[in-house]
Length: 160
Image (tube, rainbow, N blue to C red; front, side):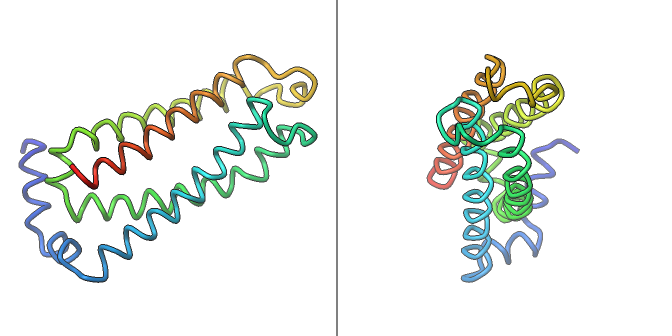
């Protein structure tokens, strides 16, 4: 079975049709998705700005990450679950929309950036408060750019 066949099959399921045509379910799912986005990306932006040395300079980087990361993960979980429902509600639209494909690529790159941060950059975070390494700043800048792209591509997906 080709991917396009699976997408067509999902599009024709009763669940997909009911979610897509519901006057309440679809808008509520979108609202929950936006709330998750706001929590996740909002906290990620603060971490990124701290990595760049733009905000909270008097707070240790490790403290900022440890306090905000659970919120970012929680918001991302809500965003991922509700986003999955949105995809199930309009699988053909998502499959055929270039903006959605761009969004998925940017999400994957953002995930790789987070993995890189935790596996390769954050190991000596206790030494950063005096001298932020260029790799940490680069991770913060790249994260901001990627998440801005995710948000823009997500909005374009809704209109194209």
